[in-house]
Length: 95
Image 1 (cartoon, helix red, strand yellow):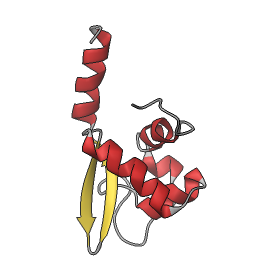
Image 2 (cartoon, one colour):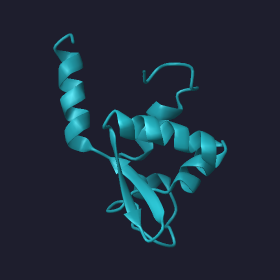
Image 3 (cartoon, helix red, strand yellow):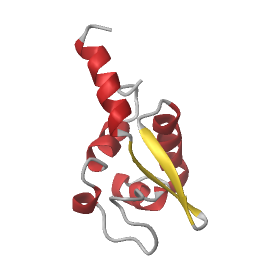
């Protein structure tokens, strides 16, 4: 799922969101570390349209690796570290 033909974008997103302050500029609303990163910022960094970025974000949110948070009228995304650790543990055990 994370390595299907998407040019590695989903893995890039997960890696960048590990330290959003390092990979993304300050946002007008919402703190990148506390609230997450906007789809527009991710789309710009990926070099894709906002719709394509949202598809990746929706998939990662759907499987629980990201959390979405509304700030004002925008949605921001950040990693769900607990869920990522849980999934990683399953793969380490040969799941």
